[in-house]
Length: 162
Picture 1 (cartoon, rainbow, N blue to C red):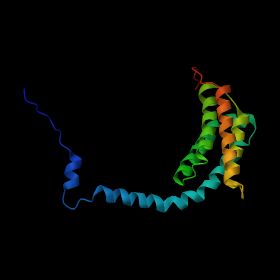
Picture 2 (cartoon, rainbow, N blue to C red):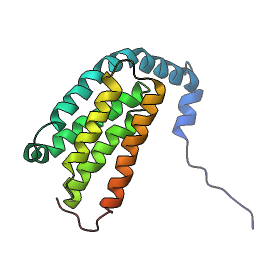
Picture 3 (cartoon, rainbow, N blue to C red):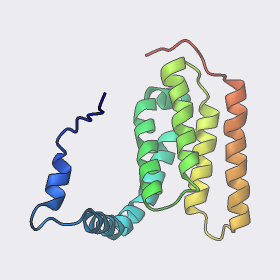
Picture 4 (cartoon, one colour):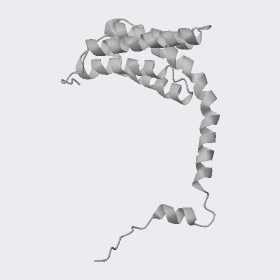
């Protein structure tokens, strides 16, 4: 029995070998350069995004609870901007806010004090001048510990609301 492999047509291969085709590596390099050129624009928007998020989180419990979806969207915007601008120190903190809000939205587990603590820590990381790298590290460790302790206090629920 002879082996006969059926090879479907590879349209990408035809495009790549076509006349005047631009090598993929050049296209990728050009795309990366365009993203790098936009990084300063994103960096300039990070502080206002964090300020907006913190203001949303500083509201009273009923308002905070009622606007959980809007606050979550604001936190995700901070995550995206921080990732693009390589502020990897604040990504897990903003994601922590999302996680806490998800617990409310999907499992009715409400912890507004923890949401505010994460937001205030995020604010300190972005706006406090003169914060040494050791201080930043301790603050991040403390905020991550808050998340870890909240995970123990609120184990994943099998019941979903919403």
